[in-house]
Image 1 (cartoon, rainbow, N blue to C red):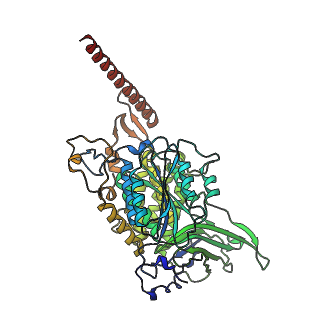
Image 2: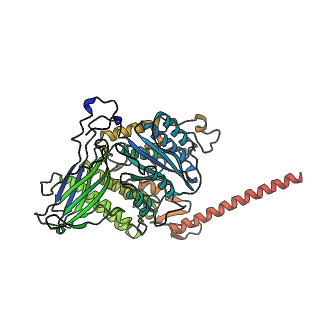
Image 3: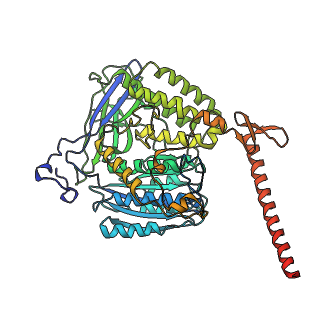
Length: 593
């Protein structure tokens, strides 16, 4: 089967037919001792033809509510001097990077939302002329009020509804920095999204800052078989967006679904954690008259060079029972007609997965299971954290680290270091968990389950080679480097926040944009968290407890936080009253004179 000619650039004719061998390999690995069954899907490492990137249909849905106008200081700048850049300025710079990275084979649409949604740009091919229009539209973005997330998502999905995506990877990327507070849909987000979202479209969410509703954002991403990414601060916005786009540009196939068929006595169950897409197996009668079970696992997109490994429990011990596995998917470059490919595997064959790899995937599955139980689904199908399970989750993570200590291979080492680093820090105490840990853990749940890399630090940020997911994909690496170069070299955005005339940034007029994609404030560091315990409202003396310096009383974090907010409001009122009083005095003085 041939790749459409319009998608091939700078190739010789002999290159255009070498695609027939590019199929996803499917293997079943059984481990009777651990009662585990692992289904491994291995897409091709790279396209057989040297493509710039996989053509994409991308819809950017961007929050432009008032909170997006807050300053985004240069990460790691000890002076903490305001450079005049707002969060929205930084997002606009990132959007310009995406436009510059696209070719005439890509399509882009831009939707903004605040009190209502606005179609800033319809879905068009990124020709030179349309790129100029897109850049002008991006420059015209300005902050407004409220956060109507639903209208933003609805308008974004509508741009791809009915569009022929053959030969392109369609995706909706939603960025927000706050909780939705206007016109939320009746019946909840998830049922409505699942009803209206076409199967070929993936939906991805990016949450910026600590005021977001991460449980909702993860559920939205799960409903669209996409990724949820927590952007902790301005220093991670660039790198998180770079990875989000690079993953789309290295898509091998869309609409992937794994199907298992087996006898009821095998009792197979997926153990990757509960999501809004989780379904129970259904029974059917085979052509031979036997009762069989069928379990369908929707996987979404497959990326070049990155396996997808799904772990199941398999307590059935009968050696004569066969499990049939089938994967169906729609290759982007190599199947323009839209036909699905299928293959089967037999778990009775000699397993080829090493003990270290089995341990890694089993541990990864257990981590996903623990996090999904720490954030169970509520009635609205949104992940909501359970305070009662916090201590239990910490204990599970500790036991998992002890199990992994027996292995020194790169995969298990990176997982162990991630568990002992950022993940343990996120669970360290109630204050840390409540402030940023819950957002980070939900993002990690998405990354480990989907086996995708959200940033240069995920997973295993202490490992010399932290990019465990996608490390075998030359195309992903090339796309990532190309986007990073564009982000760094594009002219820095024009500041929208007020700058003092004697400011360093006001004098220089520009600054190094690479600072916005290389670092974070390292919020996962327990040591830094302990340094930050001296707060305006008092000294933190335990898990979510601190002493109020105003009266010496020990009270909960919520009580102190409420008092701090009340004190801040009264201080603001007092300042306003003082200002008004001063104006009246000056006015009386003028009248007397």
